[in-house]
Length: 116
Image (cartoon, rainbow, N blue to C red; front, side):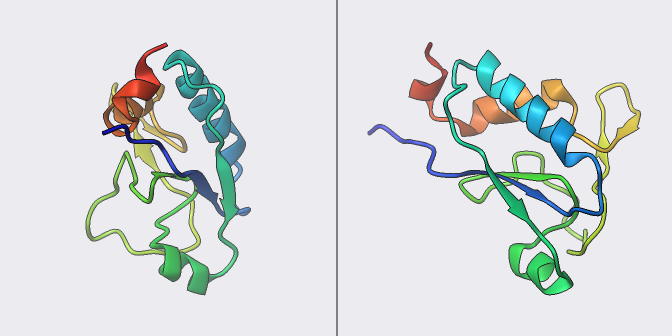
């Protein structure tokens, strides 16, 4: 059975300036995986109600078919805030580690999408 990616979303809150960088990193990772044509929907989260509805724990948040490939801690509350990621070298960052992002995408993208 062939699976396809139906939705890649980058959820963001305009109060955090890091979503353009996260979008660039995401597009670079998709390009590296041979899938530069996959669409990325930008979803602005503008209210606390939307944050709760979307389970939005901070900006930026990536979702593939509703799954966060770099999930936050289970007790992370939803809200309008800047998200913090841990880089592989232990430092904190407002965007995911590019290597972690690529590895996560490899796990969630359909195998056929990775054959270029």
